[in-house]
Length: 242
Image (cartoon, rainbow, N blue to C red):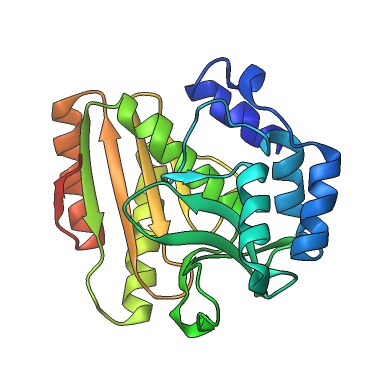
């Protein structure tokens, strides 16, 4: 997660001094409650599990103290399939979990949203990201980088055949690279692109064949030019993004 801290630091100077790792004892207690922790989540806790210095991603709270309190209040979650990782701070009543049944990469898991109810069915979970690491990168880019660009457009894919959707999203990434955007690792399913005067965030649903992307620019005329190019390449229409 050192790379994530450096990534955030570029858009929020001073973050590396604000992030506070979780206490090793609390991590051990959480592992007793939740069961073995995926490596990606453990690295997050060891880097900023106590505090993210006021940075809020996805309207959620990732503090280890809050997660421990969830396990104390809701014993049916103990050592189960789903690992609680963040509580919802927004209007939704659905919290964030890792799904052990769907591992991703070397040591990560599918990120889903679920209600904190006993016997809440697995099929009611809402998949959000292929893994925690990608979730953090995408949400940080959305929260910190895109608002720096005053002119933005949002594109969303229609309900069409899966093969067509993938082809369209691949067309978006190809055009971004043709236009001089550089892809930011490690996100592989979703994609982050930076160009200095512009940025692009492509979100691909982890399960369903749908995608959306936001394009931002410093210059209004350049945004209009790029918007026309991306509409032509992707076949999608855009709307002004807030």
